[in-house]
Length: 428
Ligand code: AMP
Ligand code: GLY
Image 1 (cartoon, rainbow, N blue to C red):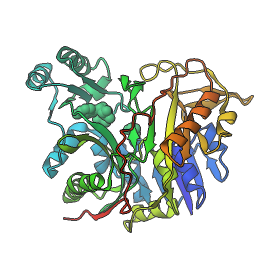
Image 2 (cartoon, rainbow, N blue to C red):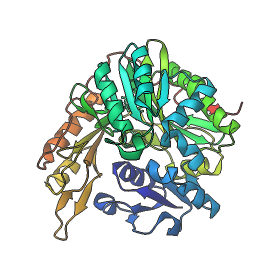
Image 3 (cartoon, rainbow, N blue to C red):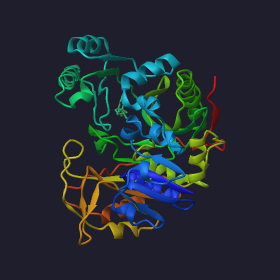
Image 4 (cartoon, helix red, strand yellow):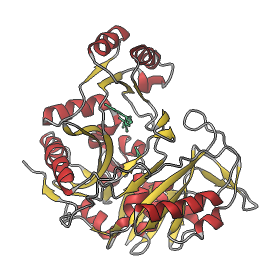
């Protein structure tokens, strides 16, 4: 089977590595690290031009832009929803209305276009306050704050088009949820759903969950608080009703439905949906999946999902090495050193994200998230120790890295139970 992966980040690098054992993989446009993987080819051809038995779309923007619709119209199976389903991520206001119709537990919210409406809604909330751009902003268009004045000022800047251009001209305001975050990536073939192992992302730039929100600075899996009961509750109260509501609206959703969740004292609540694999969640979830991933993803694309993949008992951790100035204004150009030494650490893979290659073989910083160190081990501690060793070998001017990825995991012992991930009929 020939699988085309669309994208150029560490998520697509992880996908290429996970698919390569059972498929010929071609990645467009890929990156210098992907190009070095055995059995993987990179190409500058558009996805529509690549002859493939399956296309796996990494990022959200092409899905929102209708890439999956165009490929399906040409007869190619695709892992990724059409533009209709991709609106779940492309418009937060659309997503909030849809899940409200489906009765899904989520934060109280309002969608506003005027600052006086924004102020009136925010002043009715107890805080913390959340201000989001309605449109796509790579996970960076979200402010979470305890300060009402800060929330109002942020809403004003977004609505005026100052901070995010047109993506911010409509703003979604939310009640801030408090609890532990969880990412559950669910395969959905239009009718049936199957959860992949749960992961936790670290969204803030700095240690101790401080600093601005980013696209994600690291992740780990398994997550001790994601017990089988919690996963079952998320599937039953959040994922299945959402897929049923999509089907009611004639949306044939085939791809990854990524539920971003908060485990609150009131039970799990939905924060957001993404319509693709998470980044860096894919980097920790895919290495734990067993079996033929290409065949599994093709079954999803073809509407014949039979069940979840096998899951390894290993733990996995991903640590992002980011450029100076990330997330607001990453500085590019610095020379990246130590990648080979890092990759030589047992159980470690160095995935490229924002890199470029000079003619003389020098790797340079070319984006905000530069490389991702992914490590597996018999426990989270063992995986973290390997990741630390590998991160210690990597160097570039201005490198930003968190040192507490997977380190604040609550001591609750329960791991994923023997039931493992679930398969559910989504049809009503
Ligand atoms: P989103 O782009 O909607 O995923 O938001 C990005 C991040 O902001 C989330 O992963 C959370 O860390 C945080 N966040 C978003 N909405 C809320 C909320 N209602 N309560 C608390 N934190 C939130
Ligand atoms: N890690 C968050 C995302 O992929 O959106």
